[in-house]
Length: 306
Image: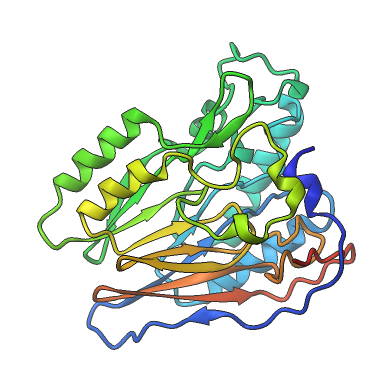
């Protein structure tokens, strides 16, 4: 059973306002929007929901947007025709309603034909991650903004049995080590990954989510990645994938996981986190976060509770 189907149903859970705010008095402080898991599709009012979210972000004073993966629902197990239609739909909606600079991140649902049910051959020129890179560019890269260095990672490991797991591959780790080593001493660095490095989801996710062929919840070689990030005193790791807003602090590093634009796949809130996104503020070496709903109310509600 696929985890997306498990987002349907259960009892309604009230949402309590969550968030941690950073003092933004420091010179050069800035805020950006962290969006994850849009899962756009023609059904379930998803286009209306994405439009509402994008318009709210566009009207806000954020400097830029990070779209942290899973743009569509779904390329993993649908045929090429539908997957292409979905990606076209996402890009059209973003171009029309998200009037900010956007940095994109690869999500598992953005990979074409990985599950055999898709009917897509692994030999196809757009198989897997190439479907994403043809649209958005490199699967991992770096950029700088107002004195902060951002590294975008690909955390989707496609497995030999045509499934996936959370993994940062060896070539990418070597690139990351070299990129961070090239930064000046004391540089402010933030890492971005779709599948979390650190999350508490194993403590409260639906038990049926554990019945998967591989670890779909977090990056299995997170220790290797954390050794690299820790050596350079990275300020924060920005994450998505779980559809739940979390913030975990470890050794001075903040692990901020945004809830989903799609909530419980356009059927209400998921484990207490409604449809929304996270505003992240960096002031000096402080990274603050605040979760923002955007007012979407699904007519297909079936909020998933813990």
